[in-house]
Image 1 (cartoon, rainbow, N blue to C red):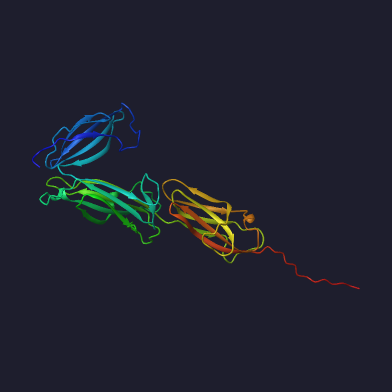
Image 2: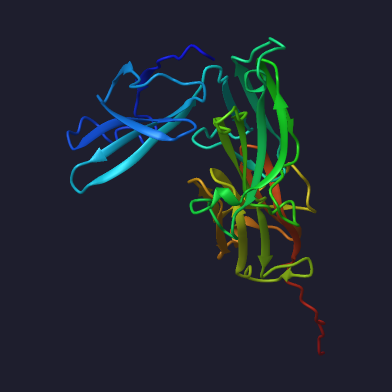
Length: 341
């Protein structure tokens, strides 16, 4: 702790979207070094890429480094990245894996499990070392979105702390979660996010500092309802118009309506009703509707039939709704034949 150190600053610009600054001369970049515990700051102008020594030694309380970009016209500043450095601050990495291959932001459905991988290095095994050198904190937060919300305007300072633990050993570990912790009475319809963060411990005048964090979006399970036909319906002529309402279709899913003879049976391959197929792309769930019109050709024979709504997601194929109905188009003639002599 008595030996002050100087830090080599590695300057990068991946905190914003790739190409956000390009090679523009409209921006000036600088690093602000904030010394703890006084929070006195020093700025040093840096090139767009490269490395150089920090302007000041890292004292026993550590320092916070902020990477800034300033646009000349109009005068605007952007905080690109921040990190905390101390004599024995460990290093941590958090990664979340789900069954959904979408990689920009980890996401999953309300009924599916997920995995959190945590790698920690730099922790001391010396019993005499101070606690901040021997341990870090793992925090799990959860937060519900507003109805139909996409998380774009969420205030993450209002998230609920679900659990807190300590990690005192270097290495790689995987935590599996079968059930999410997003608040909501109906567990199939929760919509929100979870966040896993690793923090260093407070040390003298140095505050707790986030070493790494990642969040996971949780989307509700899909639903479907059918109007215009029911198990008591008997089609004697033209098939009626049917409305199928779809709620919370999962991002990157395919949903369709199919019919087949007989009662409902899982894994049956039926006839897709013309016009009753929908591909959902994007990053958030959607509400949609199908309108079945002029679909007589899909039900050509008399008898019991099933109308079934299926959705295909990264988690497999799920039935959203199914209803039976009867087709009876046979023409019956009642009469008598007489003759007169």
